[in-house]
Each structure stands twice: as structure tokens, then as C-alpha cells.
Length: 148
Image (cartoon, rainbow, N blue to C red; front, side, top):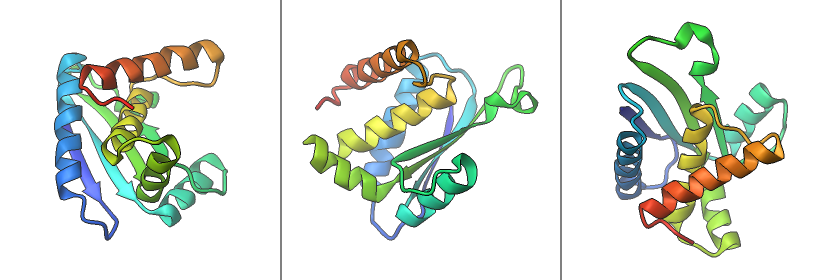
């Protein structure tokens, strides 16, 4: 799986994003996702609010937004997966790590895995779906020792 990682903020995140890319690469291998690609884009409050307003009609800052290309049949290929883009708000990573009492790595990894699961078709709109998705993300994070 080819994973593009882009930092559109002024914050120096090279070490953290290299670790995140390694984690996501391992997850993709373990989950047998095959050949394909997706992107992680780190943005600020203004950018994620703009995306949230434009694409979800919600005019507020959020922590992560995923754009799943496989939801559109034109992006489905036989032997290559074009999964899409995951936007993560860096200010939310910082504030939520404090709010939930865990590390920056845990919060960044949690949001990235959450976004990846959305790209893979998981959602949490219904209670049963939420239970399945949240269980899966905790199982994945625990497997790699990224716990609260």
C-alpha cells in the first residue's frame, strides 16, 4: 500500500509522521489490503472547518474527515485500491490528547486508524456499526501497543 503523508501545518512533525506511516503500512499488510494507495493530510483548524462546511455542511472544526474514493464506483479497480484521503486536524490532536489523558502518538494514531476504517467502508451511524468499528480500531491499536 502506498501511503502519502503530507503536513500542511507549520508544526515540525517529521518524526511523528514517519512513525505513523510505518504503523499504517504494517496495519495494511496485516489486514491484507493488497496494492493501492491513500493519503494522510495534516491540517489546521481553519482548513478542516472549511472541508467540514463544504463537504458535510457542518460549519465547525472536527478532528478527522475521510474521503473514501471506493464509495464511487468509478474509482474501483480490479487489482489496485484507491482508498482516498484522511484529513487530521493537528490542533484537535493536541487538545484531545489532553482531554483523554493519553499521548500525542495515541491520539494521532487513533484518528488515522479511525479515518482508515472509514476509507474501508466502516461507519458509526448506527449503534451496531459503531460497536463493530470502535472494536476494530481498539483491536488494531492494541495489537501495536498503542494504548491509552
